[in-house]
Length: 473
View 1 (tube, helix red, strand yellow):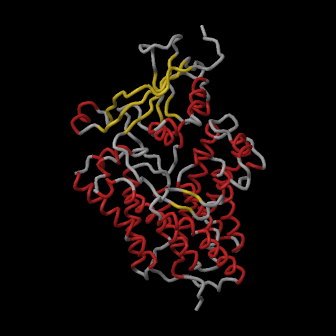
View 2: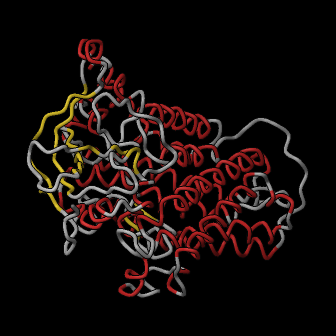
View 3: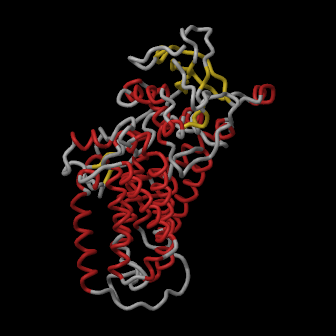
């Protein structure tokens, strides 16, 4: 009997690999379509300026060797092409070593992007994609059956994702322990989805049951991943159902989808596995060496996870090989939004013709119903949610964002749903105001057609114009 492989997991591996390639494709597409305004040479946080400050050893990236917007675009679109090839199954048509190299390329490209992505890429699912993508390199193709050790390492990631999130909730906000967090969460989450309004208005006893079920799924079920089948399959299936519930309730980029992908790798799907030769010795040595490296690098993530001062979403090595995860250790009770407006008036007054910029995903016009964007990641919209929590989250980029709006910068405007000014007539002044948003109730929705009601709180940014530019007549 081949001790190294688990032939019965051939179908789980196949689905896992194709689904992971799909997540890679979305991630690279997001980078290709948004990078110029965020990270480009004239972006809000330019990569050339960043790589001058941060050494290669601290953030390994191809862009330390060379950067231009054209080169970044080539890397991002190449990542899309390779991801599409993996999604189509090209790795299965190559020899084992060739398939491994093909999986290694998107990991290296995306690592290069994340390590220079700064605030725009400071989300846990970036590291999660890199950690999962690295292990996918060693999962093999049709030449060998799935290696047992890699399958268990994938479960180890899934365990840390779920268990870490469960611990951070129990240690964090008291509403998780009181089972009341969902009284607020659907309304205050970073980017609501089209069904979030309805989830918010579910009966409160059901919200309590949801929180209790979440605690069970994140604190008890992950342990069952390491039990014999069919218990492990049942545990993974329950996680998949829970993640699909989260997909329906909000826009969390590809966090839920990649968690589902991880859970798929733990499923023992019935069926006769195809006959395959034993794994070559060199492959066994490489896989076991990687497993030893992962075990060694797991020390700090595990220490953090069991610590009373647990932190969320942290990488402990520059290659993002083993990370710590967690989400919503605290839940906001009120929703605040930064509303950005411009005017063409020569003198900005309160009664000037202020026109509002509309974002694609974040709430703006109270009558604009949220749309589904996940797994696509609207990075500017997410950072605007953080900016509303505290101006300190926006200190590094918000001023440049306003400057680009005053210039009617084409790449920046592409990140928005709508600009109220024509391309050849930018605003003279931009201002930002902070509003409190709340969901309307059923009666208000019927009477006004608005899903939100908003109340002015304070000025966020006073009327601002481009410095050193004469007023236009």
